[in-house]
Length: 160
Length: 160
DNA sequence: TTTAAATACTTCACCAACTGAACTATTTGG
DNA sequence: CCAAATAGTTCAGTTGGTGAAGTATTTAAA
Image (cartoon, rainbow over all chains, first blue to last red; front, side):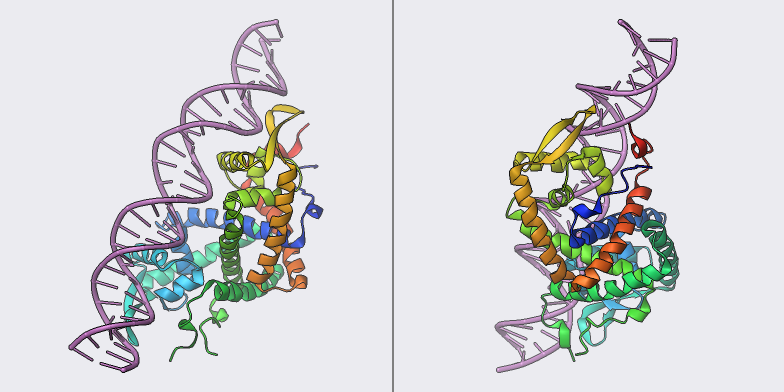
């Protein structure tokens, strides 16, 4: 087995290695997550939203968390709403803002998605649960930092 | 500091946490890598190729490693060639295949890119070098596995 | 040797998803 | 009450990707 899947990792710095791994995992994950989602009419962006929506969130918040422009969230939310998986509710504390909230169907759908995604995650990454926990730990740190540096919006930090 | 960047991570399973981190890092990294690359006319896909091209590779190999369709590699390679950063050489062992090889300018450009990318990586991820190494270790495993499951092409494994 | 099948890459038409700018609705503060 | 700021939406435009059909080359079999 001199298959060329056994790469010469020495060629790359750890940082580049990490990036390549992240790129590969992300790509593969999106690809296959999409296949799962498509059975339920969900595209990649919709799946991502659904995963994040463990609790109701404002759209702007979702935009920041996904590192996308607000308009991108609008589109995905509209699709999800059309499928009856989420509903928009006015934020009582700010009539301009919408809270995106899972419906009963949405919660069910999300549970399924989380289950499929976990399975997919192990299948795709080849990691053990222990390794996954390690990665999750790093991921928290990364996500927080990435969202921070991505979000230039100054107002959200300390409201009320 | 009850800023909403301090998320309730308990809401998510470790697998979903990991995925969210990976998505965020990937997104942010691509975004900012692009900014760097654009000064040198490089799009995201071109940057990715450049990073991988530590040594000459066949186009098909690149397609597998990036988990993209061959046509996507063709496009990126054409751009890089147009910029004089790589050149196509026939594989002496198989006249159908092209080897993509960095030119002198390409090597220089790649070195710069690797340097910028590393810097960016730390800046974006907020990880320490030690953590980066851990992540790199996981990433190797992930990349190998992801490429494996992504590549359904049976022939490549054992050539010659 | 000739020929058929497989393989490596390219070309091209098409599609999904994101961004940025202009717009609407609401809040906040003078 | 009005002006400025903010939350979200709409829309046109761009990017980066796929998949199918086409070309060139190798491989293997007759």
